[in-house]
Image 1: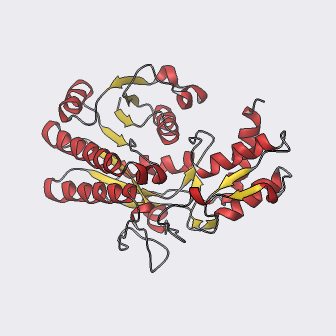
Image 2: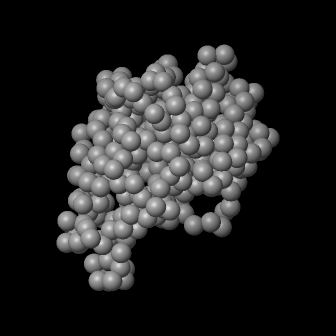
Length: 319
């Protein structure tokens, strides 16, 4: 039986990835900071009892080495991060330090313990920032515009360095925005759907949002985690763009959700305090290599994804 370690298992990707790996016969070990925390995603998917939870401090290489010695995992999926772009402007030092040091600790621990262990790093399209040519490809120039993006770019190049310098089977999946019912409430699509549903029963409620003119490449989390797994099944490690290949404005998303729920767009207020110091105007990626090399299958439009998310959110909504 293969053993897989997943960090960030309390997040949407961690939960869906755990479900996928369990379906393929893996023993799944989830890394947590607190065994008493909530694991809504694992419980929602009905797999909480099937996952082994283990305390591990990603700040401490010794803690990771103990984990590797105990489980000797075949694969490690590092999904843990301070992943909010907005929060990274408020806590730049903490964001950059954790998102970089945790990756470095993992790679060095693998090098010291068992260099055959395969390592997946959750990277981000935010690394590319200001772009002069679309769609984004892995080798597109990087111009990060946030502390979060800087931290992910640093981790990305560290993975490449350990692959080239030490021969580790490590790779990065550059995932563009991807959503699901399990997405945290502070992320845009989840927030808009959740608040819009509440507004259907409260005629006085309004929704405050930031810049709706930016365009993003959005996808569906349960499909994106399939690409993560496929990347570690390759004989030769490489980095891949995981995306839908098309961008859509945030305004188009809000309009679609409000239309589906019969809400008036006049109830949306642009709040200047929610605007970021810098922002990417438009970004979308090229998923050709992932489809051709990995055999990954993705053909959903984001309107199809929104339909699924709205339906699932309504099905679980409680007044």
